[in-house]
Image 1 (cartoon, rainbow, N blue to C red):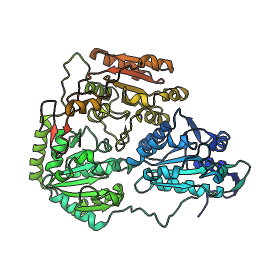
Image 2: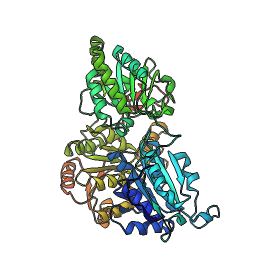
Image 3: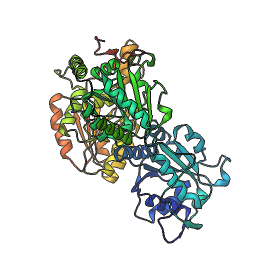
Image 4: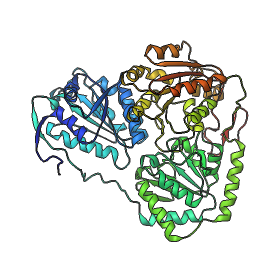
Length: 579
């Protein structure tokens, strides 16, 4: 182990925590103080490199750190106290775990000698977090803190990324006890060595299969974005002239404006994407995990396809869908190797078969193509998202909560760049959108940052409007207000004869007045003709948070929608039409 420091310093455990974060290059720490971490907060106060963001609820701290990681590719960092502070962070840790997001969560703990005594604000955070972290650890000696923090970042950011929890008993941070401080430049773990480069033989097989394909498709997920491999994916797709579909997490990995992009696939994927997948004879799956929202009934999934699956996590390959050509490795070097082999082979895809395939895809595009009835006196949510996409020129960072508004944003905002679509995919966490937008805006202050939400989701972390005021976070909130828990209502319409059990949101607040009470700008939109002026005003207001409460048609459903239990090509296209 080598050190960056030529002179050994003597620091308290608390000072070590903050110095280690600074040496790791951490700029922002998102958190909320409490008794078990007050020594750390005092050390934080006495330096200026690491800045602290005081949220109003610990869940918001985790979502801010998560969104920072999704936008930047670097681990976000959280600091919370023991007991309820730590348990309040659990939802955000699980959100990051499900979507493979790098995050380091520092949780306070009671004094070591009190652990197991049911002391005040004691909770077994290691036990609670074990199923929802990549790794967790506890500090047993103050002098180990630098090593453990370096280890936490290494594990969180390498291989398949994920959250790491470091539990710190209060007596490990006593200000009057000093220990030698050395921060490791690098770290090696005997039991943890993720594969980087894919097996050359498997890559060769994959390239051969791709070139022989008659009906190919490239299916790209969030691993392409977290693996910073969008350029390689785009180069490969354009070299082959093969269609590309993205998962919900993978939107932006391939430019949505490109003709080869057939849209998002899955439960609310485009008609053409789902049909292309179902009828494909070769599928190149890159950084995607074949989750249930893509596959629907796994027994009916893409019956004629040879599947090539590239993933850093060997446990994800053939977990739900059998991979005929598995490749374990980081997507960036694997795709680079595939491109190099294509150059060496000088071979070309089957041009006549590919022309026929594209003709079929274009026919599928004509069937649905994202159309909706826009000629109505009531605002359609699709029209709102399209207008936001136009006014931001597709350049904004867009966060979302979970529900119909999330699907409309995924379908109708045109993502042409990676790391711009920030949403909770695997866990589906309501309350994610606003703190996620805050995490992005804090780190990219000059960018347009939009939170697309609904009147149900926004209230789950609405207290963070106070944090936005304190730190001057001028995010734009697009609240698609239909008076219902929209996705719940859609399912109740389709499966429960429109019995709206606990989905009607009566007694809603006046969101405009509420935004103003927090010191922000509130705008209400109730008619189609009011939309464009309201958006222009909102995005012209650069330095302030603007809350747009936009009343949309409560009867509107998200389509296409896969038929539950069906194949990927079985979809509802409207309330009256299905494939």
